[in-house]
Each structure stands twice: as C-alpha cells, then as structure tokens.
Amino acid sequence: MTDLDPEDTAAMRRENGGRDFRLFLRQQIANGQARRVAPPAVKPPPPPGHQHGAWPAGARPPDPPPRRHTEADWQYALDRYRTGHGHDNDPCHCGSCPPTTKENQ
Image 1 (cartoon, rainbow, N blue to C red):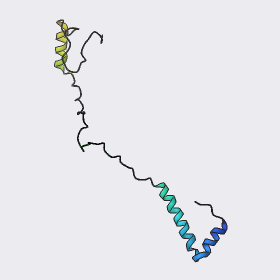
Image 2 (cartoon, one colour):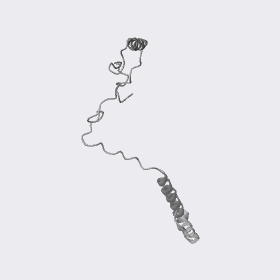
Image 3 (cartoon, helix red, strand yellow):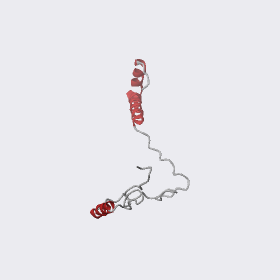
C-alpha cells in the first residue's frame, strides 16, 4: 500500500462524498489479491520432431520384471549342481541369474 498522509485521506473522504476514498481502498485490496494469485504455469513447447503419445527416438518400453524361480527351477539347479554342472564353465541359463565369470567371483 502507498504511504498516505492523514491530509490525503481526509481530502479523499471529502471529495465526491467519500467515493474516491472507497474506490482507492478497493483498488488497493484488488492489487494485493492480484499479487497473491500465482500466475498460470507456462508449459514449455515440445522439442522439435515430437510426436504426441509416441516413445522418444531411440527409446523403448522397459524390460519386463525378472521372472521368479519356480520349484522346478530350483530342483533343476540342485540336480545340475549335484552332478557337477552349473559351475564356472557351465553357467545357469534361467534368465534371472547374472552370467558367471571369473571377474564376478
């Protein structure tokens, strides 16, 4: 709000039956409310060549989650281990296990 002297306030009340003073106060209230309202968010323009709803160039859908081992998978792994398979030179082929290499050990 602007700084008002008591003489300014009295002069506004005298002119037009106080109408100027009421208009001034309403304008000050409106200005204060306008400062409180946030401006609308500006949405940035899409990048050049953007197709709405399409995957970006060079992207693909995410991989499916790794499958969980079933009881048959565990039994097969145990049988391979007991027979000597499933070691360094014969890795697991379940799809969920990382490849076995000498660096991993």
